[in-house]
Image 1: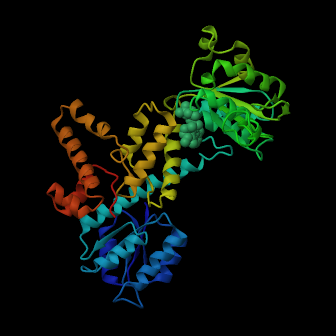
Image 2: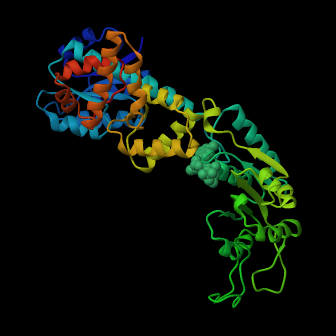
Image 3: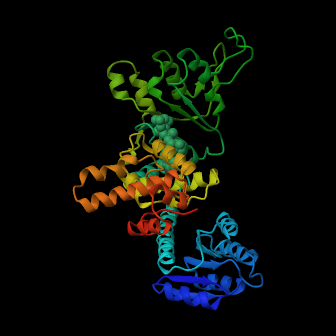
Length: 450
Ligand SMILES: Nc1ncnc2c1ncn2[C@@H]1O[C@H](COP(=O)(O)OP(=O)(O)OP(=O)(O)O)[C@@H](O)[C@H]1O
Ligand SMILES: [Mg+2]
């Protein structure tokens, strides 16, 4: 049985709540001090809190202070605030302070049960999410637990201390640059610069001076001697992204730098020795380019002493969930949004999507959902997966199922449209708030009230 803490100084209400909420192991407290002690001792996932606690029964100061203290020691606890029937402003204060929901007296056994049971479901899902997240961290910035990512991490750590030149291959958005930077971070060069240059995004005539630098007067406009990216990476790592787009005319010069570790600036007469580790990436087929003679064979062998293949996200099993959780946590912090996790429909949409844009696509979707989600949970609609939710209707011919699915979608859409305001959502749907609560409960919808 889950533990539920009821904080109320009114013995009558205590009794009534205890009787209504008989599915739980109820712990009782009647003031701030005993409540905080009970939180420490029993660690309940869900608490009901009467705001009018002694010595300030008529106001909410003591209740709000208790709320603060509880959330300070147990921030994940779902606190349902119970207020007098016309005390909306304190209820809202409590929600702003981090309470999960509020409930206005008088106590209705059915409604309070729905609210409490939803709070428990949510607390349990969130706990699970946090547990998953804790395994996701990584020292070199590569997140994921799948076998293929484990293998990649092992390879990175193995090649990092060597001078071997690695060629990173993978679809767009799979983490080629992240991998290059991981090679740098795992090497003895990590305190020196990591410099990235994208050969595809710099016009051909500028690429040479970008890479090799130039002397004053080397060409019109060369007002002063300028170091190129190679020199800027001295002691560190140079990441040549989209190496397949390196103009043929520059390839010989690049090869010379790779072999002799010496460069000459444009317009310069003297050779400069450089100590730079090179990592390359491309999503072009270099072998084909070699066959077509658009990429020098000797350069190809020189840059691909070892090849790292980054698998697409759809082939990385549970990584997609781990990464999604990671981005959610990160953007919730960045954008100061009180978002705790994903709903079940969001998780299943994330799992079934093919992710053609790989991690970058996932990252963008999670980022905008964190900014846009009205509640404290991100659901499939927030992620832009309307189709995922809608599809069921066409597939099913069972009337009850069709109705249930349609209701589920309508509720979620109303919830999104009303920006999480439950009274508004109920109004949109043409039902009373308690009816909406029981539908949410019936379908187990992971919807929050704010
Ligand atoms: N394993 C990972 N853990 C955490 N974040 C990742 C991981 N892989 C990629 N990312 C993030 O995903 C985004 C895309 O990664 P990256 O830029 O390295 O991909 P790419 O393969 O270079 O893409 P493109 O081919 O489009 O240049 C980045 O914001 C990066 O931080
Ligand atoms: Mg890239």
